[in-house]
Length: 230
Length: 145
Image 1 (cartoon, rainbow over the protein chains, first blue to last red):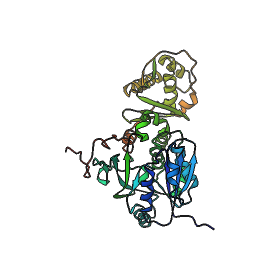
Image 2: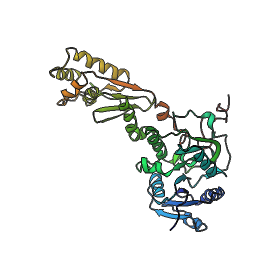
Image 3: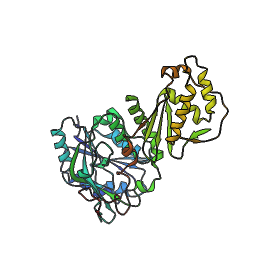
Image 4: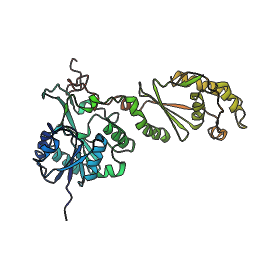
């Protein structure tokens, strides 16, 4: 009988063949043995599949292009780990992320999701002091950390659901809203930059026009719940 | 008459509770069931006097119901939830028992607790070349401070 891995590293990817190697190498550099890596290729038209042939241990799942939420959900569907770590195919982690987060879980058994500080970098690796660390956070008011920085107990998804496929972006923001309004503590945080997010022309943040007003129908139910509580 | 100020507001009515979100300020509003019924008629373009007249026909309605309706309309206008719009002739469907249950009190609550949550999305609000704007140093101060 196959033993379930401790951590499922889930990588949704769309036309990120040129970046995914760096993402995968950053996962291996974690030296965290008990993991599985799943890449859901969201209908890429580039060389993603070819690149992944160099990594036979990675579970490759192809789907027709359905968007980031569907890709994340497909990742989750295939995941067997007790902990979930998302990593976008164009981003990467620095060494020690998963070990530090597992240690944090050991020390804080009540914790269900733990974030780390992260920084953005541009295509040419030129960092512009674009970093979010603890001092800048007013926890509880907003979510300043991307899902790529989080390690999440799988039970969170089982209890509160997956990502909304209607959302072309901000699917993680909606997910965190949902958790927050359901009382999940999102204040667990490791004050060290373990996640680096690449900013480039193809980021959906820049390519998808989805104004805040379009996002409101997805969060109104959480506000309603707040109002009903009185 | 009036309509929803849909250039600024997102409105949703479910289970007799209206939730209105100001997309520009992040302030949101919640109404009790009585307020929701009147608000719904208002944004459908019903005449205010016609609404008040209809409410007066409900047996338990207080004598000052028209004053209450006027005050409610004024409050919605002050909060920019409604703006002037065309009058639409339609039958009013206001369930008197719902208003009676709320003692004919037309309430709209204002909530500020999700302002930052609704407006700020630092995860996604980034500049292509510079990351977050304003650029923050590790100590949380702006770069030019």
